[in-house]
Amino acid sequence: MLDTTTLRVAFTAVAFTVAVLLAITLGRVRSTYATWWCLSLLLFMAGDALFLSDGTSWQAVSNPIGDTTVVAGAAAAWGGARSLRAGCPPLWQLLLGPIAAGAAAAVDHPGDNEWAGGPVFLSAMVAYFALGCYDTAVVSRPSASRRSADRVYEALTAALSVAFGALGVFYVGRLVALFVWGTSSTQFQDWFGSGPATLVQLVLLVIVAFTMSSLMSEQKVRELQVRASRDSLTGLLNRAEFLHRAQEALLAAHRNGVNCAVVMADLDLFKSVNDRFGHATGDRVLRSFARACTAALRPGDLVGRYGGEEFVLFLADAMPSEAEKITRDITRRFQAMTSLPDYVPTASYGIAPFEAGVKLDRLIERADVALYRAKAAGRDRAAHYRA
Image (cartoon, rainbow, N blue to C red; front, side, top):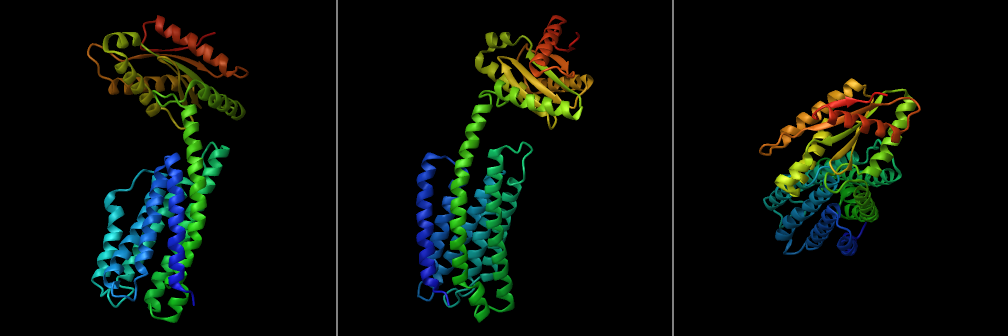
């Protein structure tokens, strides 16, 4: 038989140590995910400490509070997993499980029943671990770029998904065993009782702590990569990153024998916006055009800020007519997003279709020549490169 009290004390000590170490790291590396997990560890630690009073006169109070706290720890763990994919979950979803578990335990004679509200408690744990498994599995799916940093990130989130899944399966087993054997049976106590549950949590805590620490470092690396590759004002690719990615896309298009095009875009009369409305308004106009480009492009297309009010686009698998259609869509969206008195937001475009043997820098030069033709012809239009 496992000494449940000793295991719970050990788990509480390890959880506290890990939480402190993560809190120290969190002071240097800001991470929403790590904040959620520090909260989760503290809640698990507090809940496990409350369960130490089972069999005493405090059990009637500590048991429902312990159930609430442990389920809240599982909810916080899911919050951390969700933050990697889609931000913070709705508050009611985080509170529903803990409140239900605590209420079920409170009305089920907790003073003389250590497993008061057991079915609700176990069901809530299964639900939160299943949600955590799903969210981390989604994040761990292979990305299209498959860069080395992405592969590491995917492997770490996959490990978290496995840990969530293992906990979920174990709690499903506890729930089934509760109904089949009952909590007082030898089979339940040997395989799914408090002792085995604490041991499983202790082992997985070590795995999760290592994974979480590595994931925090990877997140910091990814943040630095984003800062290095993005234009700080518009959020689009900066010039260097666009040229790097467009070169790769151009080589892929050449290998696959598909059409593509480079488009240079320039906001018409943009200097007058800065002169009349100020640079802050000019910045908002630039951001509006960037959002219009992002919304109009298709999977596989690229857009970057080339400099000032100039933007550059790489359109994969696009004939010149399709490229011109996309530029009209960008202008339409740009006008819908921008409203200034006595100013009609328009842009001019130069389109250079891909030709075998023509390098990227030459395509950009051709698109720039076509752009000046569009400007000379009256602006608010697209012009195609003609040799």
